[in-house]
Image (cartoon, rainbow, N blue to C red; front, side, top):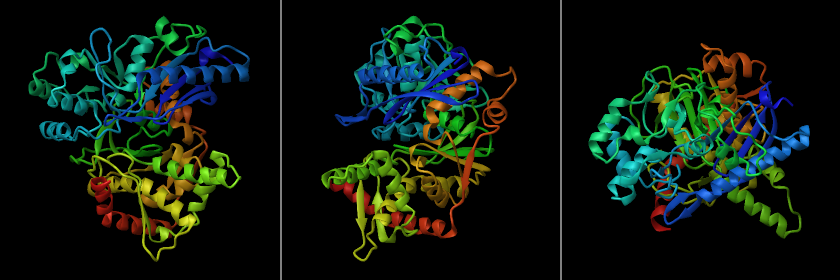
Amino acid sequence: MELKKSVIGIELGSTRIKAVLVDEQYQPVASGSYEWENRFTDGIWTYPMDEVHKGLRACYADLAADVKAKFGTDLTTVGAIGVSAMMHGYLPFDKDGKQLAEFRTWRNTITGEAAEKLSDLFGFNIPQRWSIAHLYQAILNGEKHVSDIDFLTTLAGYVHWQLTGERVMGIGEASGMFPIDSTALDYDQKMVDKFDSLVNADWKLRDILPKVLPAGASGGTLTESGARFLDPLGVLQAGVPVAPCEGDAGTGMVATNSVRVRTGNVSAGTSDFAMLVSDHDLGVHREIDMVTTPAGLPVAMVHCNNCTSDINAWVGLFSQFADAIGAPQDKGALYTMLFNKALEGAPDCGGLLSYNYFSGEGVTDLDEGRPVFARMQNCDFSLANFMRTHLLSALATLKIGLDILTGEEKVLVDKLYGHGGFFKTPGVGQRLLSAAVGAPVSVMETAGEGGPYGMALLCAYMLNKQSDEALEDYLDNRVFKDAKTVTLMAEPADIEGFNTFLARYVKAFAVERAAVETM
């Protein structure tokens, strides 16, 4: 194992921190992980920062142990390291590096007033979860810490700062903080000026935001304190090049080779989102985010706060039942069995209905969520239909947003890739997503671990690219030239069934609104 030719990608996801070591052939050869969950504390979805530190160290230690077991060597150095995380959110610090407010994650829907006012000011959709919406809402709320802000960043930006001392981030991650000018590969200056004039704060916006870097640029090097931040045991050496941090949307695009114009991908896990690289300007839609690829190309994004959390809860219930009858089941095998069972269900789920909203949802304009399961008296209440209902529910809100892009805005997509935990059971999530979008869906071998793998590939690009080699060309010609991909197209009955289910879902949406109001 030539450590200097390998790279490490780390991603802080919603339910797991994952690290992968990727060799010079772009193959993941070792991994580590740490499971965690967000908390709903005092009305805020958050992760305590001590858990960030603990989780990163545990994840890295797990990776180092895997390397030692497989290759008989200590993980002393690598060619490059990069970190990615859930995009958006709010992490402010003062000039001494003191955290000024709890970490407010992408899942929060508490910035409605700010998001609406900024969208009107900019003529550009600002979703509630964006960092600038959180900042302006804090100003509107009169929160005292605002005047002391010296640095505002995201979770990935914070970890990168700890590793390198550099207040920078990749352009894809930055595009979830503040609108980007894809020509300048930087924050949109006209909008920066409008915001500064609006708030008249003690600071200027550019002074507190991270510097924007495109894929391939240097994000700094691992400092001695940064090495100890990851590895308190002292084995990892300082001096390793660090790629600009990225968001989970950008790393998902890289991991599925979806960074070229007219390609797209759907990431489905705790949340789900579709990213379509557009070849023309789009109108302003509350349901659609405009972000960028890690190279800075404009991307239309449909982001949904809720995807698999409700599925996980039901699988947990079935696991408890199995334990209660003395037949405990491996959790992974249970997921596989139940996902496959869904394919036996009626295409329209036989009259069953569910809303998977653990939290609020911007696409359907809800500030809070309540998981709801409902059915008609004469429905076909089978396990197969029950599971299919929850899997289709996980895609329903995404479908509502995608219809705007493909219908109203005429966005064309030549390739659509799926990745994330929803696609781990072969063929199931892929077939149902194809039914939702009415188009073929491809899944690569790396579909289940897209984020950290995508970050590792950005590290490799930084190390190995030729001076004029675009990211999309590097991925096409080097990384994915011989990639194994499975493509599925849903049957017409599946497509018709999904549309019937969605019509029922939309018609009965008052049920979900009533649940939020009364429960």
